[in-house]
Image 1: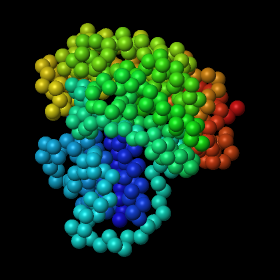
Image 2: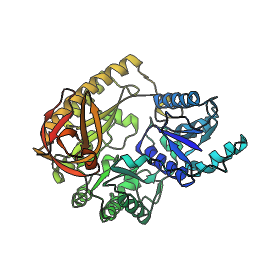
Image 3: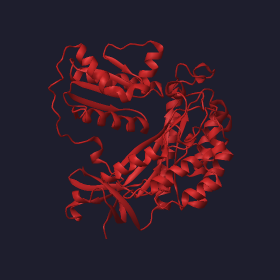
Amino acid sequence: MRAAFLTLGCKVNSYETGKMIKLFEEAGHMVVPFEDYADVYIVNTCTVTNIADRKSRQMLHKARKLNPGAVIAAAGCYADSALRKGERDGSVDIFIPNKDKMDIVNIICNEIAKREQDIKNTQKQDTIKANDRHTRAYIKVQDGCTQYCTYCIIPYVRGSLKSRDVESVVKEAEGLAAGGCKEIVITGIHISSYGAATDNADEFVKLKGMPLLKLVKAISQVKGIERIRLGSLEPRIISEDFTRELASVPQICPHFHLSLQSGSDTVLKRMNRHYTTEEYLAGLGIARKYFENPAITTDIITGFPGETEKEFEETMDFAKKAGFAKIHVFKYSRRYGTIADKMDGQLEEPVKAARSARLSALEKELGLMYQEQALKEYENVLFEEIIETGSKKYIVGYNERYIRIAVPAEEIPFAEARCNTIGKVRIMGRDDSGMLTGDMG
């Protein structure tokens, strides 16, 4: 069987797609690029916004056009949402909820058997695995969320809090290290809740991040893992004790994604976020106390119901004050089944788009300012791939702060062999496209 996968949405989905790919390969099936002809197309979907829903449907329809006779499967959060609402789509043969992803091979094979297709003589073939091209790997350590932000559907489709035990995570990290992986990204739906024994929304605050810290320290002992990066964190986890202990782990990257969503306290309250802008800034102060020029990245939603021009300006001012390295800007999208969907003061699309554009412009300015402040003459770059821009080839990778840096491949003998290695790069400037460049001098 030829199976093709496409991932939409968050890093958890990327991780789970990798697991599903492995299951197919271990069962002897061939995994091919999504654009290729395949017997089955699996789209690991997202439903966090209406736009995500639309994108999920578009990719499922595209799969149907690639091979009208293939099995088309929608997996993940959009599938959960569609099943719950009783939605159907003529392009989709099977909706696979999150809880059934790890049984996907049996589900797909049963569907094909129903179509009377012979899969018994499928031979195992050597293929390039999805993660072979990457020098970093995601490890999902936690699932579920109980924060119930008023705009978010995820707690309803992902369910209660669940954490993996330290031993199983370490074993997975050891396997990745044995395969040559240099960097581990710890991910989950709400990793700040890692280790929480109950679904109490603020249980993780009582834990003070100690279970997550224990996990990080255990992974740091795995031979071959040179970098550990944390996925999205709840701002309230950034305490003195947690951050001081985290800074004692040599492999930890000084890059923290602290989701903000709004720089206005009144909007944060309507969103049911459990902190104020003052508390968020205090966390940034702690992070910058224990890490030199950490990259602080975040998410911000523009055009939330009732957001006034004054509240939006508060967000713009806060972003400047926080000095973010990168902002992921999202226009608010109504989600059926959420509290915010029923709120008064829904903004028109042109207003949301204009505010998104203004914040995106500021984001570019802040990103350049951060790079100028944080970059040193020499940076340690984990090289990932060879790219071609125009007529020139570069070997590119990221430093610890997740700043992308490129070196002309012609300056490095056997450049391909340097992928998945860490090299010291002297920063020289930017090319015509704005990409940071350097040399191995």
